[in-house]
Image: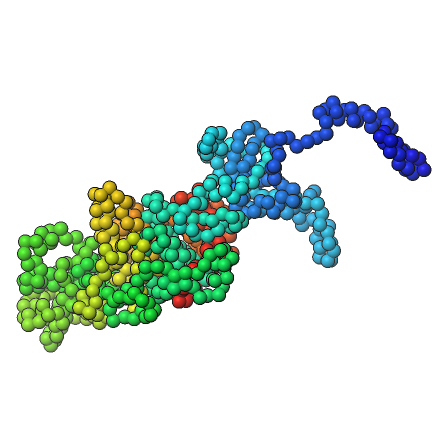
Length: 619
């Protein structure tokens, strides 16, 4: 054995076959290290960094960089984390994790034969490894207090340090603030994502909540309503299934209660709710403490929208407008309308693409159609329902005969029209004395939640007639509120209208046969953006929504969608969502969503807050 002296008085025995390092050589190495500045230390500008940028490859994407990080830092960089890259050329960039971090073995492919062989045979082999993450560049940070952010024009250089932003700075950069809290950011549970309710560029820009059954749309909608009510927003919910008619009560679902507890939230009902259901129809929640019946007013509906919703054929539409014009003539001759100069001035401003003929009821029109059918078929005299027309059959026949000679049509066509209009008339929801029309001024009170319960109609055409009239009434009242508030130099009441099962109201299959109805909706959407009136379209069948409707939407909540064709179609309508989020859409769990709101810096994936209120049924 030989003894080896390390130069500091410590002697170590080594085998005789091992030659000791000459002391002079060790001294020379130490002197060279000292001359070079001492032992290597990480540069100060790299201190606190968690990763380094990598060289680009032929498959690199413009606008993103690959980063490598040690295994201990993989957990520090979750999905959607924001990072600051301090390029070695002095530029500073902000980026977001869009893929990874992935664990990769050092010096080996992940599918290297040696790794595969030992793994499938049950051996435990964990070679040294590192993390790899793809970072999308968001902006270049210019110095200042506060700093200025501009679009990145260059790329960070290789081996530049990468720093992860803390929760507070991440929230500030993503602009997740807002009084309407939607959920928490996936990958960072310390960040709550909200929507600003008092900026005209956000909620009045209209919202689309889309997803398959069971994806969590009802939870999102009920939570949005609960928080909109607290923010003082008037909410009108067109509930076709009656699912939301119990949101005045706290949730009793044990899973929701447990989820609320995990987020430090409590179950509670939505205050100031009122249910409105059609005359003669039942409510899905008859025990609700504030429940009212309402009826429609035929004179408030555009005859063109009415004809479109009833899906009349061209021949039937021709008969319909023949009868409609004849009814106007009858109302004039019988002095039902106009009666005086004020009525005549009202007629001068009438736009039948917007509303119907004043004081005309559905019973008036139905009676006139029966007179036409009887005249054409030369059948027995019809029974007239309208009190205004009772005893006036001869005069009505004379009016009908005049229109008939100018093109009355066949008996079969009149009978088909009579059947379609008669079916609606039998519901007795128009112009009834047992129920008052909706008071839109009451509906638009700040913080008031009006649930229009359409669960007992079982007739989509009735639902669409209700929706069409309510949208027009809400727009008219909001216009009045806006004018009054502007005159007082105040902000008008904020209002949102939630349309459940929107694909049944504005179907892609029928939109081209319903141009007047769509134009009314488009007009409401355009004017609403300026008058604090926002529309929320909710559907489980987004493939049935026409492109024209998707084009009205600026804010999105996308729950799980499996259909790749639907996803590809949404790509053309929803801008700014990166490919990684689109790829995640089919695999989202219930309650997860990809959201894109105008107040956020970029689209985000969130875990939606559980609903605090009771839903009568779940998707």
